[in-house]
Image (cartoon, rainbow, N blue to C red; front, top):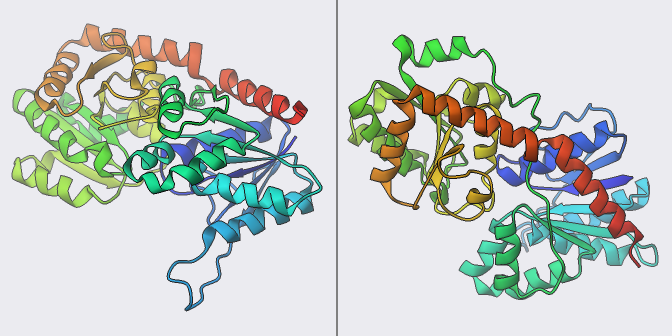
Length: 374
């Protein structure tokens, strides 16, 4: 198949999943064309069967904001025509599936199919600003195929948007050969000298990820045991998280590392992942930790219970309950047998249910159904 993929190229779960999906599909012999305003962070444009097409947005004094949606639609139509694409796969309804609808209309009478994958914020945005509801519902209804990364998100979409479109649940995935337990002794000894426990948080540091809460949890843990915290990522809440570390007197034990590649190395060097999010449609980083054999303490929200079973691969706690999260973290970090069991459970679940080798065929089957539909 010849597939065009559009996603946000910056750090974030949706862009990561879209990029890894394209790479996996390319390895299976499909011809993949990424269409976006920048090269996705995890994409090597020189990879076989993959091409990148940059969307150039013209700036003009008349426009307060560059018309990216229109520029993207034009580029989608151009790439689809030039390379005879079979379908366009849009990650995020707004604005990508709207652009795909315009591109589809531009290409008539030739028929190109559109698949939209919902990742979360594109739906919760509607809950926060109802002015987006009509266009979101329209873009979903006009898609030839729709998928969601969790059953929670599929149900939330039906409730929030009111769409009657059938939504296939295809969960996020990891490359289980890359995200795997391994020897990260050099990182461990550097950040946890003397056997200090290493906690890690990875996100885009938006308020919904609660990075300040991560520091508050760690401050409680550090009072009880020798520990250090790795804060991987960047975003609008980083300054507040750094301030919280200074206020709690743990700034020397908290390392703000910014955006990093080879995330599996950082996770694998850690003893526990903290994910106290206000909401998560899936929680990809929790799955990445599980695949590496690292226990998780996370919020009991959204699609996370579909990934982490409370007491099995980690612990789930009510969102915002800092004392409870600290208590669960200490329970894992002070009980080696429990931590080992949870790590093994997480690795086993990742292998059984969330490896790319299991999930990519689900996307291929979805594409075939869309292409064969009338």
